[in-house]
Amino acid sequence: MNKRIVFRHMDHSDVMESYANQQLERIEEFLSHSDKPLFIDLYLEPSKVHAHHRVELHVKCGEYDLHSSYEHEGTDFYDVLDHVIDVMYRNLCEAKRKHDDMKKTCGRHDEFKKQR
Image (cartoon, rainbow, N blue to C red; front, side, top):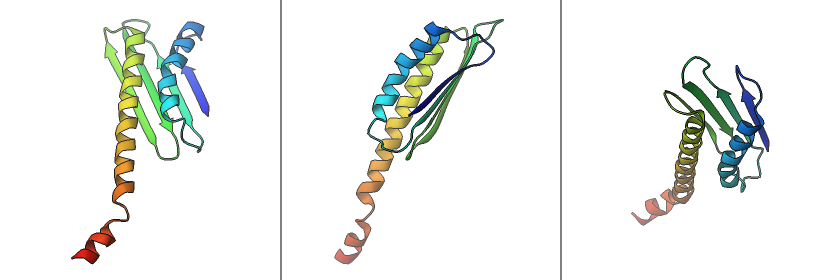
């Protein structure tokens, strides 16, 4: 697994990095079944003037290539990070459900044609 946390326009923060790693454990646990290489890129970009922070998350795996970002004025930086992680987790669950549905119906079309 390749995980990268990038701090844009800010100094490296051990506290923020440990919090981000703690939050990313949900995504890592969800994708732990995959034997293909896993790439997680998290971009943290705070605003210095106003509370207008931006967080981006890219997850690339064998079956998934998803992107989630959030930017909102007036919210705490940790809340923005939590929102991005939650959205990515929901997107991964939805993509997995669609992938499983496709696998279930993949070979059955020929069976239904023979019955008619």
